[in-house]
Length: 434
Image 1 (spheres, rainbow, N blue to C red):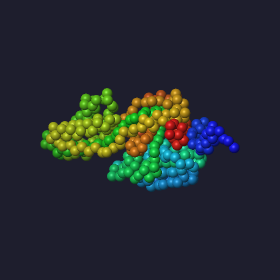
Image 2: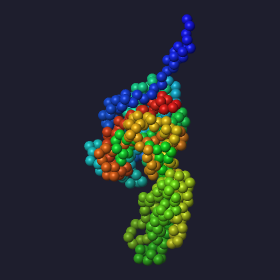
Image 3: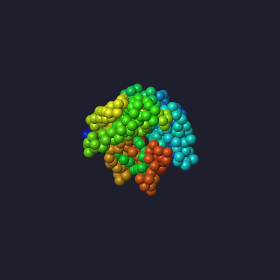
Image 4: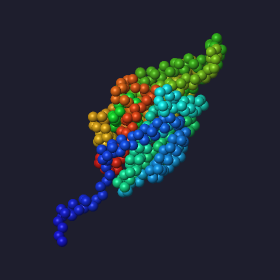
């Protein structure tokens, strides 16, 4: 029997397996059907928050869910991290989807039936504990996406790695943690991750919107401490000592002048903030020593190094001018959260298909920081902000992140489930250029 070349070509095309790409309408329906459970998970996590590197109950909650879906599960990663592995029915690339699990040392004052009453220890003090940055929503949304994607196992051409990460807010003093430790332990290399994707809920962006930016999205973050040493004296005779408190006060002012008068802010933004000053025990004793701690935010590596140099110079010279000394310590911190331009361009149609092109916003870089940046140093990555504010609220009135009044409108969670799912399906299915 003679078969024409055209017929052979058509038969060949039909014999090639169709890679799974997102059916956006179907995923939206599944996310909506799952929404009540996702909200239930989120409320449980919100009511029982845990601090960085202490997320033991949260990790167990996540691991049980993943095992129930038939995923291969790894626990104890970077202390309390959980990895879920979903291998598709066909070979292909590997994408990592990440959610962070830790809460903050903040006492909640939002009137909710599931408000946190938890307490913990932070820097040796008993503190309230609250999901004041939305990490509970990230975990619940990724749990939902794991459920949706696990039902498409046979369609997937490749592997999805679900990373439930501890200690995004920073490991306790003297400990390692977070994304940096996960990278150090080889999580990405072990699983052959080709790309990574992450979401952060935002309390000042309306539900149903996504904010993104190629290149540098979030700032590098470095903590600093300045130890000012003087000479103790009675408060009635300050001339007999060297007052480290007045030196510290001058140093605080001097640090602000680094940004205001010595940094080219038309190039990139930069911030130096002092968060704590500690020293002294009595009103009538000038102490021997005062310590300042604070944060540095930068979006340019060259500017960052210059700011480091100027902090050292400013603190030591001001202290010396009054006979004191200053010791400056700056930690390694977090790098800039960098969205790979190619990955961003490739996945932009997926973002737009998920919530509508009119609801996807190109935004300026911000001076907040994220340790997802460590994953982005290793593999092409994309990190976006998802709306979590009631659409009828004024963003200027919305409670900010890391505050006792932080609040998330749960109507936005289903969009996160859709987004995690659609990005994985489209990346592995090649819908956007693989």
